[in-house]
Amino acid sequence: MLTKEQALDEARQQKKAHAMMGRWRSCLFVLTTTLMVLSAFGLRKSGLAFALGIVAAVLSVLCFVMLLLVNLSIRNGRRNVERILDSLR
Image 1 (cartoon, one colour):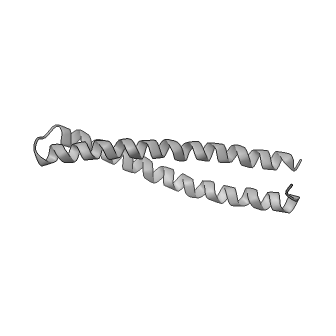
Image 2: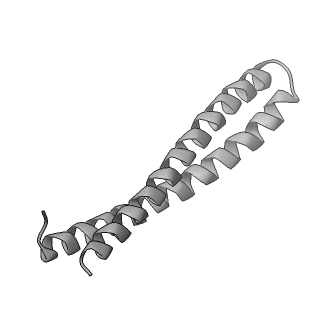
Image 3: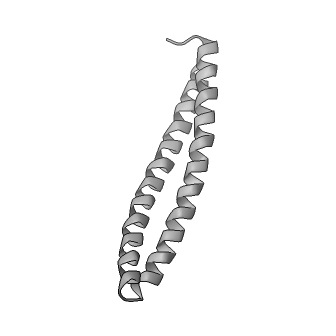
């Protein structure tokens, strides 16, 4: 069992991690959106642009999945911090 000070320190560290993951979430959102626009543009063309459109579409799907995972981890992390703080009351 954690002492009160250790629990508070753990909650602070997790909040810092949430802030960092929030920045990752923002970057992934911008990257996903940009790749979706590039894929839409590329898939309307032919030749090399079409191939790049396919690559951009695949990468946008991967970025979107990573965005969902980061969002899920932030949500679960916040619940964990709430549990830590509730246990101190």
